[in-house]
Length: 282
Length: 147
Image (tube, rainbow over all chains, first blue to last red; front, side, top):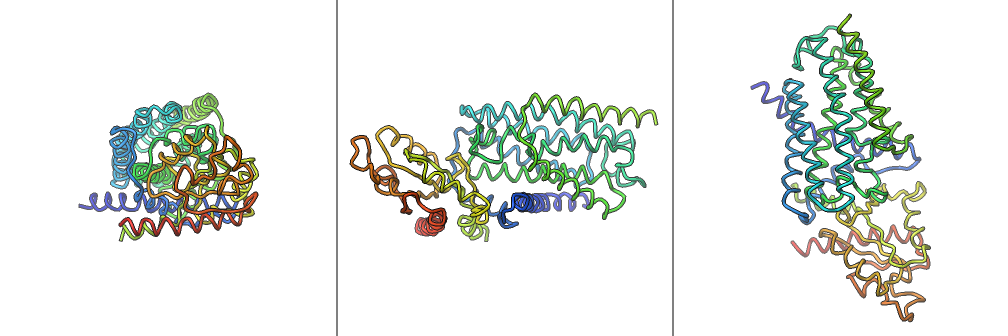
């Protein structure tokens, strides 16, 4: 019963928090660029408007793919709030990510196709990092369950600092921020238009936006696990991490997927493996 | 409740696509000036999307000629309803000084229905922002009538 209540809290709080974070993000970005920026609630207005638009699809696949992506993202957040198994959460969100790509590939538009290929590259880059972070958590707690993390008397960050940095790569990719924003760009009038999102429109784009909010909450939730012993420090850690993300987004140019694979695999996975060896030996 | 929130949101989140239909670039520069920190149209939730499938408002600058009228119609058709069209500048409104030229069809309204005409050569950014705001009012009215 308690688990069910936690799942419902997760399903409701996920999009609310995600939308607020998206709104705050645009506000802070505007502040960096000495603009005023949109209202904090802007992300909700955008999604509500998209739900009210005409349903225009290229083919039936897109409808299915948008729904599966949304449901998988929501399920992974629900599992996270239910203190579920980290590996299960990982696989559920991976299924969603792959469906997003399949929907984009089902349309003939070259922008959508290129965006889908690049999204696959991004998945290839961040998924191993996520798995290594989960392995690290296993080595510390002896379990893949989130419940075990809450029973620690010392924050995970003390034992897995390098893995936290590697998780930062995964967070930047998942948030679709510069320098890793090449599968879909924030500014749709560039070379890629909207990449993987180009062919989704109206209510289906709204579903994908909600799925994106869920994923943001999921990855930030994983970051939160790194300081599970003190709620205040956890909030500080999350705030600092997200502010750093926005700063990086505003100061970096978009790079290529080759650059991303080199950085994330060499640096990200290198740091992860060093940290894992330290955990294993120490 | 959700329905009324959607209605309210429409006016708060106009995503714009800008099409240069044979303009001299004067009006285009003014359109882009609206996005700079000085005017900052993102305050009103305006985003320049560059993809007709995501857009709510079509901004057209320049005259329509026989070569690009199909492109203009195609972009208009790709935008999901509800949508609004704003013709910007003297050329977009009527064909401007080029209206008598043999290759020119005329203003944007010769090809697609136009909701708002923004005059000027080039149109001022303030006038363009005003045009978008008036356009949103019209489009809210259209949705109201359709219901």
